Amino acid sequence: MLTCEAINTFYGPAHVLFDVDVKVGEGDMVCLIGRNGVGKSTCLKSIMGIAPVTTGQIRLDGTEISALPPYRIARAGIGYVPEDRRVFADLTVEENLEVAERHDGPWNRKAVYELFPALQEFRARRGGLLSGGQQQMLTIARTLVGNPRLLLIDEPTEGLSPLVVRTLEDMIRGLKAKGQTMLLAAQDLRFSLSVADVIYVLDRGRVAYCGDRAQASADIERIRPILSV
Ligand SMILES: Nc1ncnc2c1ncn2[C@@H]1O[C@H](COP(=O)(O)OP(=O)(O)OP(=O)(O)O)[C@@H](O)[C@H]1O
Image 1 (spheres, rainbow, N blue to C red):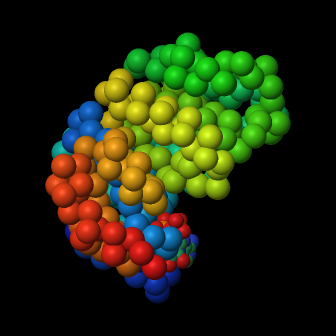
Image 2 (cartoon, protein in one colour):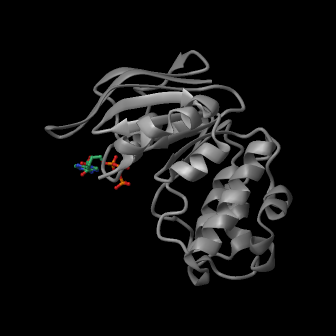
């Protein structure tokens, strides 16, 4: 579905991604892992057109998208959940979902409430009054009701309590079980090894390792040093 080939991304003079290749197949859950600052977020932002690539190709079902502005990339079927949760603080949970809903796929309010029962419980509450974990759920749910074919999620569990992390991890497993294609940036090797079809490990802007879950589990002693500071 998605192919990034030799992408290079800069912030001004700072070269951040170096010839990065990433592939996400239909129905796959792909994890992009690495230490802080190695370029995971930049990779997702480059796919989304927010940090446009300088060189390299990004294709969605064979169509080159790397020169498109973010809104056109979103329209082409990519949904993006950024690291900083973005909910409409003055709108209720229900209204947050309503404004984003596009009736052209499997996801609607009913389906996301099934995935996140906690959101249904708080459907009348304003977004700004939710906890960090609930806001993260709402951000993911809001992106889902737009029915993206590919969902990009940036570090969904960052800064959340262990209990909330577990709830979100279960929900991501639920998404995978429903066949949602996903590319997830994460720091957690344990979770990635438990759920990902394919794992990419980034190190200083380069792909330092790539393998499917079975390979990555067997190569864990190779991967651990890339993740340690
Ligand atoms: N807007 C920006 N302008 C300049 N440099 C940036 C910008 N955003 C990120 N960087 C730098 O690019 C590099 C990669 O950052 P990025 O956020 O992609 O890493 P990351 O792996 O997602 O880490 P984190 O978990 O901290 O978000 C870092 O050195 C960071 O300081």
